[in-house]
Image (cartoon, rainbow, N blue to C red; front, top):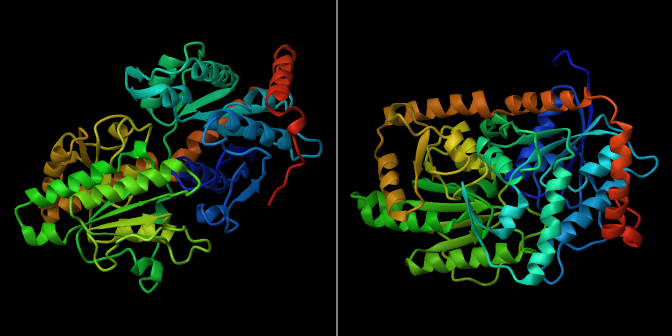
Length: 484
């Protein structure tokens, strides 16, 4: 434990499900605990059947504050209700008799920041992933936003939401970004914020990926195979572009010169799947249709150990040795088994302009070659040049280009593969280990606490604004909080 005063830290995260942002929060909290700090996580949604194991096995203290608001209304107004749910969570934190903390760590949604600073008189560190206004208003590539043409009503709805995002983010005492890419975008599109975000890369718990798995476990048996395997780890969302993995796999089968290898190869698409989200459901079905269009066989499975199984409609699946395996809501042991299995040839990381991307780091930590899009965060985590120093391949998101890269990966001899594996593991451990992330977060938290008392001028200036937001979003609808 470092010679540093132990801090009481509260994490605020909107939905503690299964995804890269949630993995970051879990590992950040674990890392800070390892460094001697006291950590509590507060969230508006935590389903024990759809979460990372550390959030339910006692490794972390998770406070699930059940809001009186839905996630959306008839599939609309997601951001409005996200603000309302977070303000309800904030009201729970600021109620009389609630625990006191030295500093708050907030990520994804910034609405609560002025409340915590003014009413809670506590410093706040904000970890920004990507401006929501860019995610909502069009298709973003670095330096360019291809805007949608919103209706007048949509514009009237989004304008105050976008303004609120910027003005509340500006109140954070320390602002962090998950990559240089995100930091550049942040500075370019939040012009009123003078702070330059400090980059603290997401980290992973390397040891968790090196743990032994039980080969007799039915969950492990269901996902492992002796057949050469291409692996994709991503939530089932359209923007993750898992279709690229399927198209590249199909192109590879037609290109590769050794039919006995290519025909026995399989693709595993594993990721978080939430049946409450229409995007998840439609994405899964569209991927299944794409697999069928290439005359590939497939199966869809969920972990047998999951208490509440995801209901999957009757499908014409192939249960034995399918070409494509869809794995919904994989367990930690299944992830470890897939990444550590000698038959896993490469990880396909398909999102373009990804803000950071934890998948490539997970693969490098296990010594698995990575093929990713040549944009966004993966250009910082993966080394592609020079070839003798590479830890992966960065290519434009084109199936034929990716198939050519996969031929290169498959064609490596054992010495080349071992050398790449060693480089990848060293890079992951040095730059993206949980301890490296925890040190960066600790420095930011200590800096925020060291700023001392919040000035009374700032307090008075924001009290009216806080009152307005309370009236606008919560008002008389705040109900007694439930926790578990």
